[in-house]
Length: 167
Length: 182
Image 1 (cartoon, each protein chain N blue to C red):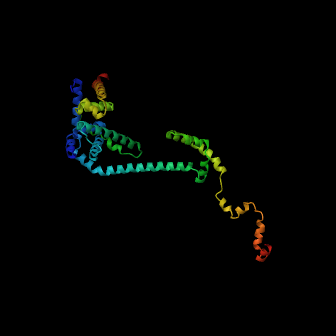
Image 2 (image 1 turned 60 degrees about the vertical axis):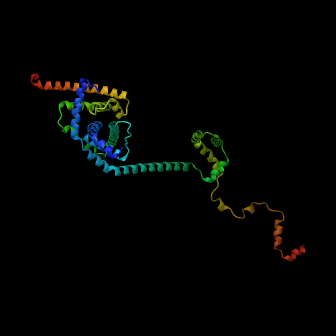
Image 3 (image 1 turned 30 degrees about the vertical axis):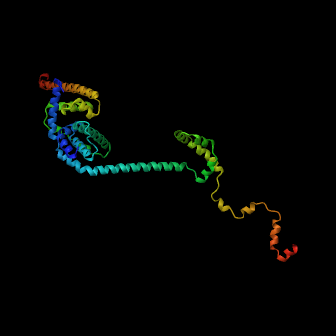
């Protein structure tokens, strides 16, 4: 590169600077050997740190997703009942063919869906201890009585002779 | 390239590499040493590989520049931490220990005042004797940008030196004529 007068002055100053720098330059072998000795520990610790950070992020994400879905989910028995009765909101969600659009619609209407499901679920709610209140004679009590049933039952108690004479 | 061959080449370039590392670290010798050691470590680990697309010197200087930038960022983060008190170790100025002419001292001060890109371009051209194309490769910019930084840097350096020279002359004259004024 051709240098003008001003540039020559700058170059001379840079030359002087490089001479000064050379006096403080550390030996190549010193730096090279130090790099060789620090090699395994540093790379190991860095990779371990990266893996640990990745695992921590993955665990945190999965926990957050799990908690979110858990809070949205209703008990399975109630869900089965509500699924058969499809509300207009649900129908709209099911109709949406585009997966991206469907996702968006689902996100937007999720809260609405929960609100509509709740009254249905409440109206069909059954106590979990209702089974304990049931008895084997419930069916008999609910059945209408048959004609002549009581007479036939009485007959079964009568002695056989009486039965024969009757016949 | 075999590691033994590369080592021999790196040894040849060691002085100029350290000079470039010094320039990237604002003339902090301890920091430059750490940067150069990290560069050698990257080469040993295979994180920095010479593909042969450019000159070895150009490639090495680009690696040094990137490493110095990342070290600078790391240092800043360390300084932001309340208990990161290691910064004082690197504040030594070995350059000050050297006997330098006034002009050289003023030149270094002027160089420090320049924007980073301009300073780097001037260093690569004048100190490392690289062409503008090679300087652009090292800095990862276009040759047009490198030329612009070179021209502007040269202009600003000249202005700074002239300004400081005139200030120095005025100050000297005042000192000389202080008795006459009183």
